[in-house]
Amino acid sequence: MSTTACDISYWQPPVDDSYPHRWLIFRCCDATFHDPNCDHNNAWASAAVANGRLDGWTAYGVYRPGMNPAVLNHAARLPPGGHVMIDVESWGGAIGGDHSTEINALLDGLRALFPGQLIPGLDRVWAYGNRADLASIFPNRGNTPVVVASYGGSKPDVPNLIGWQYTDGRYSVAGLPSSTPPFGACDHNELYLPTSGDQMSAAEIADLKSYIDKERVATVAATNTAIAAQAAADRAWLQAYIDSKLGGTINRVVGIASDSASAAKVLTGPGGVVARVVDVQAQVAAANAHLTTLSSAVATIPAAAAGTAGPVDLAAVAQAAHDGALSGANLNGKTLTIHDGGTV
Image (cartoon, rainbow, N blue to C red; front, side, top):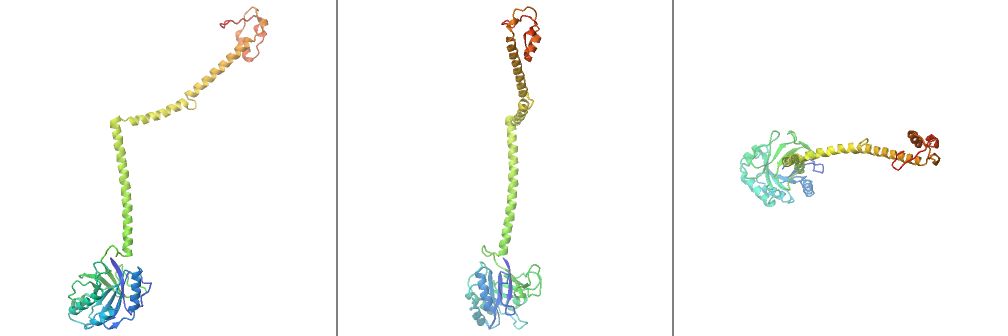
């Protein structure tokens, strides 16, 4: 993972809770000199790691020829929960020549104080310097992780690079800060730490979650599209199968059902056949009622008319019976005889 870390000493204010990055580098000593802010910075950083505010911290000591015991004494005062680093510089030519043997001995002493790995794959003891000083003062570094100072520009191509000090606060690198609270402009490093399952930064975890969410959405959309396409293919196959086996019977059945619905409307709808049949039945019933009325009327013809000879105007009698006005006068003084066969 990549994480930003400020590099501070007593030249900067002591660290406080306004510090936003996930790693802190602070000076422990310069040979025999103990940095006045070291104890505060170390206590804050240790607590910040314990409560999850920081992923880690690194304390560094400045290499001076012949001063290894002093650096080891200062380092022994540090709590065991961090990393340590040796600052290898020429200090304007004050230190020259190859000091690899003494520096490697110092690093071995620090490894005895800070054994093992807090981050899988990362030695807890590092070295620091610019490319020129490391090449001249500490050329035989073995596999020691190094933080290389190279301001501005791009990430250095150096073996075993664990970090890049890209600014002293006066240089800018795109996408990276050169000023951080509470210190302001100061040395800033970008650390390149090995990644394990439980050592991802909060930003990397958020990026991973975002990526997973996008992939999930894309997968769901693709799955839905595939399901729809498969369903359409299944319907087409089923229709083809029905057509091949039943000769389109299903479509004909659907058509017949539609025709049946139309026929039902013709039979039972307003003015349909059924309604017209009912109307005829009503008219027949009405005619029967008139006939019944006529028969009743004829049966009430006065007996006095019986035996009277002469023709009878049956149309007049029927109309009179229909109108309820039948009387002997309608018989025109004639005799009306009704036989069983309905003959008059």
